[in-house]
Image 1 (cartoon, protein in one colour):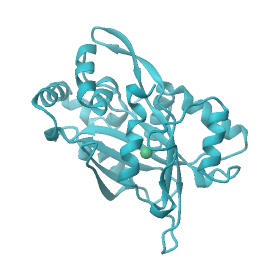
Image 2 (image 1 turned 120 degrees about the vertical axis):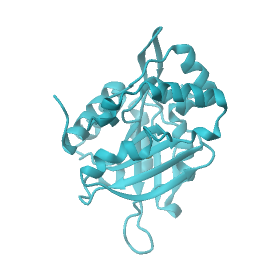
Image 3 (image 1 turned 30 degrees about the vertical axis):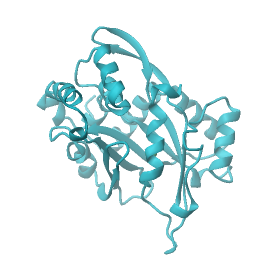
Image 4 (image 1 turned 45 degrees about the vertical axis):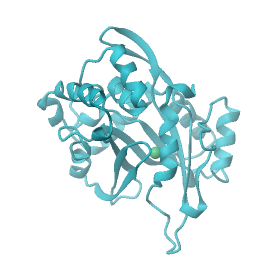
Length: 269
Ligand code: NI
């Protein structure tokens, strides 16, 4: 079935994401069993800052579907640039798209990534659901490992391609929990591990946003020279606080996200 509408695209993204990250579906179901309603705060996508596949290319379908650009972010430590998009319907998840700044890496990384991107057919880019179609290139495990030594983010992209990196549960809408710490305790009680790099809760009430996440699941990936198990995706939780103007803060906090990005690092398992 070809995907041409926003609801179908979001549905496909969730199905693809939970197939890569079964722990997310298990945790989602635990919330539902408690009688909670699960609202997504945001969905995060990754790419490279290359003209062919950058944020502009990835955001096109969302803009067509009514999303609007809101704000951009610089993650200096992680060498990332990101933009977030919002839909006028506030029940729709925000879309957060980051891109790796290739020029800040050495020639080897740049040439590997450029070779991957050269393999992407123009016709694939024209698909409405390109951002959820997976890996549009061939890559061998040795190349993945080479990238991983330089950037976990580049390695993740090389193995998984275009698909959600994470979905984020909007904690404010989980009525049976007092706050994000309460959610974290529940997740750990149920046997899941949280990313504790920089503390389990990233951010604070002072920056109007607190986030936590599970450690990434692992998945078997079909590299061009065989199958290997690599980190896949994580599940994230976000609690938002009102700004002095009285509205819930809708942005992101670069400093906290620097640490959240480490949830897919291999060393963390
Ligand atoms: Ni996130």
